[in-house]
Figure 1: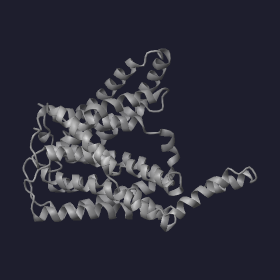
Figure 2: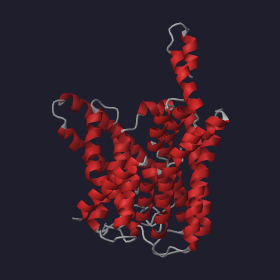
Figure 3: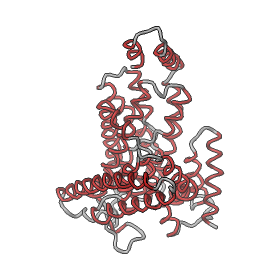
Figure 4: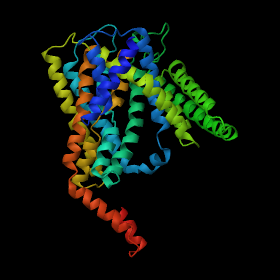
Length: 426
């Protein structure tokens, strides 16, 4: 009954938020908040819901890997890498400084204050461009110079964010706080030296890349040989995702979602990949994603909410917006984008969305994020998700759209030379 209530409420509120031009994830979060202890308190956050939410985050990250275009990643180029790098470093620094001033109470079951503050910075690095893409499509500037830079930088930003999450949770995670495991191993290398941790991280990526390449080649041959029946491919693919997630956490002390993401990359780009993507999206949409997002809302509580935490929440929202604009915008300026294009790129990277929620959930599981800070994080995510399309419509004027359309029309004109076409496309 509780799962039925979660599924229906997340869908209803998701459709409502979509109708008012907000992403459905906002509705799913709102459903969890309303059903949880903050309001109605009609759904209990029990072990089944927590475990399904954990499986949901693995499927979400696996789907993200599945839908990552490796060719586009290669084309993103050095400019997108610089934009993404500064778009990670500046927000991380801002989050750390903010945590340093507000996170001052040490709990024995939590990681050290320094690692908690660093992790607040890691949450700030996240970028979710799904809202940005829809807004840019609506404005007709998705394929503009700034639009392409945003897409390329967002893909690299996700990978850098996963690397940062892996390093911080491995070095600072406290495995004793992870629920549901009799003998947790995630973060078990935290007590070792820094060199040991980095060796284990490097070993995992060698193992993961090797496994991904071998699986990619084997799966490609097997699929071509048995193309008539694709249903068994889904089972084998999901099993590979779970095995790589398990190996990441148990043998290397790496976040399981990192293994899931790498597993998705291994399958991406294969023939009939859209079939696999659609099936996993169906599994996620029908059960796991609603429970994951509702579980975050159910975890929110008013316990410990005071004037200091309210001020922290307000400043967190401001820092989330400003640091992304400064970081990504500065990277764009360095790569010789115009000031206006740099501002457009910075604004396009503001939205944190589901990526920040995934990171926050994983940090909370290993004692890097206290429950009292989960509420400000969720509020920050919702705020950045809502403010991004509003700011995008402000920084992309109708003149930008007209200019981009004119250039595209001119580039298709048969009366101009190939060199002129290429110049106009650029």
